Image (cartoon, rainbow, N blue to C red; front, side, top):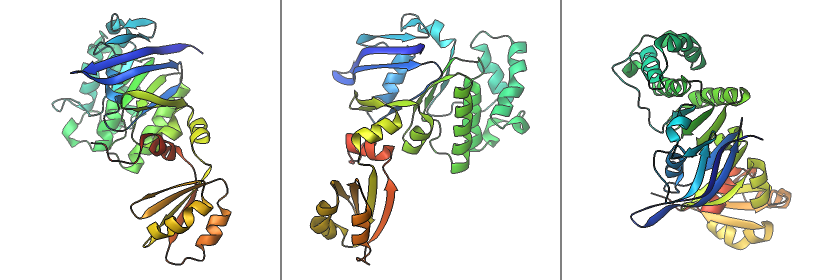
Length: 304
């Protein structure tokens, strides 16, 4: 494996408060690596540190063989960035946004123009080449932002919540495009609040909470390590009383949140047979997933 990004014992604080606390990770060439965490966990700060946009209090970073932040400018020439919020220029057309962005990397106009047709095809925006940004839908803007991040043919692409606010069709199209990029050997670093997105796309991922890395592995390995294999969600009126009387008998572990009892089991059949005799309760039976891991490790309380 060839490491394209290495982070060792990274610390960062603001106003005396630690926001990145001893984070270490390595991302290999051709890998999609996910960075997950609740709001305020330190994900965006970690990305900014990796890109050399801010300096750490301590720790070592290497991006594409360059020490960061000392030589971040050289590293960023081979990096693409999809920010959390679209920042396209509304006064320019779709193609002009790509042209102007390419100039920031020192590319000649002829070189950028030669790349634009393939980028527009990649983003499914060929038919929108000459339209202005305000006429685009949210999904189109997001796809253009992704295409713009590829204008310099980067080796590494940072994506900060790339599908937030998109409808399911747009999300699935972007997922398809991201898989195509990893198939081409591109390396992706992805932050997301969508656990199904992380589970589908990421080869490995890390979970941050309060600035610390609390878990790191493949999605399937994290599920196997932290969660019972089967989950039965029981919901409806009276579920709290039902859980108090029965959940511990049928579950290895359970949690009650609002009107839902989450029952984690090795074998769901005894619990399912029991629930068939309780007509007032409904239930959903499913395999454990990454969201179960995330909520177990970071808690269910709202972060604001």
